Length: 439
RNA sequence: CGGGGUGUAGCGCAGUCUGGUAGCGCAUCUGCUUUGGGAGCAGAGGGUCGGCGGUUCGAAUCCGUCCACCCCGACCA
Image (cartoon, rainbow, N blue to C red; front, side):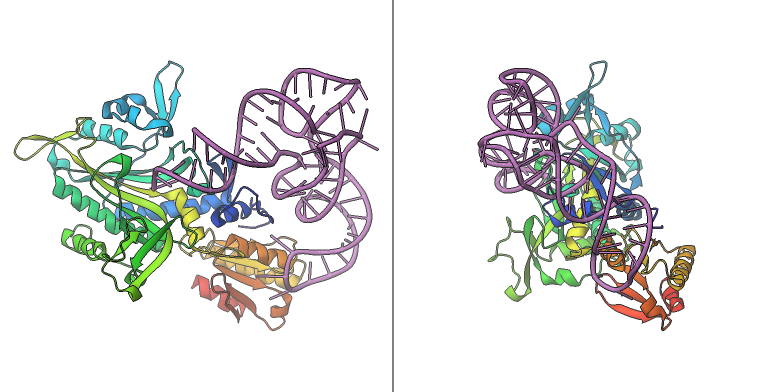
């Protein structure tokens, strides 16, 4: 992508309404634009990152055996009356009346709809286990939206629903998701720690929330420092082997972690030297809720014994749009965003530091063409700007690697390859720079 | 939902108290000079001052009303 043609409306100054760093940086980096309170348009750069995160979530859901569907944003109130939640959900649910006077709503979650799909088509234990998920926009009419996409009213969420004949099957599904969540967040360059959670209004009796460590997080967390040395991103799991899955869950549920509300220094059993205290952001939650929805909605299956039983369900959510903010909270400096490579909008940015210099232009254009051809997502700053402006902009938008092409280096035949995260700069020939990324 | 605050150019703000030609910085456009950490000079464009109503010869400014947005708290992917 050429920066000269890219719709990237960056801001030099901080918009006054943005208080937390991810919100400020997302606005300044031209990723989002507020449409109304808690509702955002996603501009090219932001949307690109959003889709990368979404894709990682999708791949890990698929790997864990879930199947993707897509349910609508607008739902009929009828199903919600059937489950009893139409009255229970309160003002957070956006209620709409259509032209015929029918009560509709903008879905805040999808238990009812997925259960309806399930009960229409599934009658036998033989179709189980089953996990269906979708990645769709939700709307919850928060009293006080804030923190940009971290706490919006409209948000993109992955919600997965599991269906099993009995409790043991449901726990298996729960455990698969537990493991897949560890891996999902790690693949985005995040440290997310599962913590025992209250089940809240959604109901049920087994739940963990996943909390990403970030200094600016909303809640305080305590955990065993052993969490920091786990490599979940490269964890190889066979989800069909429940012994293996359960082993992983057992290992990590026994490793201490708790939010400050639940932390008990005396009872945690972690030596003081091993106990870390930090802040975190909730980015996902998993629940087992049994027959809470299947019973009222009559989602039943026949067992091998010919008995009809309501299915045991669980739900598993990941706040996809919130993750964009959470990643920035976890990874930035005073100059801007530092994207982990897995979710970065571009892998490499080529900065032509002197765009009216023939040598600089030839070298940077050549690098751009070859990197692009090699399938590397590359951004070239080909604008007629001063070097300082270009460097500041690239730092702001957080591309992990910058190749700086300037007359100073070209005199001795080199360009500079800069790592955004460490700030380390290595001089090398253009060919070597190309090989570093495209080999 | 309780408490507080703000709406003036794309962004950040002054002007409002004390009514009298709508301003500043950044950004944008043109030209020249410049080119390694957000350049300099010269010029230009851009605003029904959140909406509606009222007071007045005259309203960004005073009064009324509505709307939008933000912050703190209680609640949440």
